[in-house]
Length: 405
Image 1 (cartoon, rainbow, N blue to C red):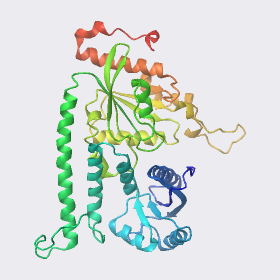
Image 2 (image 1 turned 90 degrees about the vertical axis):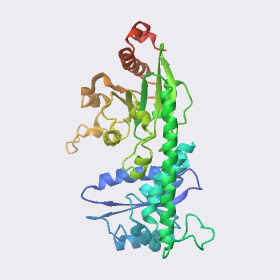
Image 3 (image 1 turned 45 degrees about the vertical axis):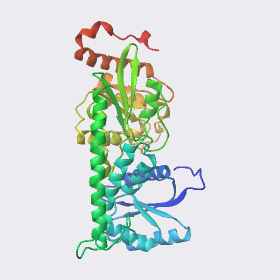
Image 4 (image 1 turned 135 degrees about the vertical axis):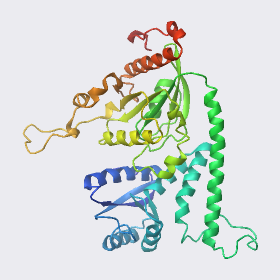
């Protein structure tokens, strides 16, 4: 559970359902992540509501009885926001808002709000705005506020055009404008990437909040923003890094997450061009997280979507300092040993063993095993560089442990 540290945080209730595809343990895991998202957005989850259902109620997502429980709690404790773990339809969102009388968000809307807060550059803000409008378009019906007030209503609408159709046209025009703006910026960024020459490119990828930015700060000796919150990094940061006398480009990219909104995947695909054009991927994993294997699957899925799953990849298992295996008492014969009881050494002998020297175990914050990490990255970058420029072979001798700073 996340501790409440700021009295100004919005009081929020979280709501999710148990289905055939999502058992109780899985739901708890998702709600834990939703609580972290809520905290990142500036909220404090005071209670969770769950219900076992075959499928979501098409009108109110959860059942009538459970909805009454939520309404009573919201009214009694003056809750300002109710957040659902799954995406709500326009009808569901409208119906729930009428019943609860408070702000209603779903996971997608929450992530979009965090992205809007975190976007620093014009490019990131444009991408987030595009995703927000694409999310909003099918939800316009029933909304009473316009996105903008049209000046001089006479002659501004077509015959028989309703207000909702006008709003839809405004949104579609805005989406087209934002897509054109992103296309223009993409061309400018493509030129910038082209101007970097033929230097080897390495990209940090991974689930959100696994320590990519912290690792980049350690390697590049720069000050990339890093924070223990989700989506601390939205804009791709590129730094020139030199290990021994071998220079290469290192990029830090936006973190991935399960149930990532389709709108965000689409609008941020251009940001991930650094990943597409990378020669080597460093897939950073928070091994201290109980479900890091699912995080790996989520990242690999998105890498497949952007056609980058076949690139040379080094798996970097970070936060070994925070890893703790659950203990299993010797006289406890009823409890079966599972992965949560594995020590780090036992993990290394599982499927990780098949990765060989492409599996590294480090702590970026404590700089544990960073020397081994640098050596492995140097070896891989050197091989790519020498293959690309065979005549430079004598400039970059084999890396030795003593050469590491």
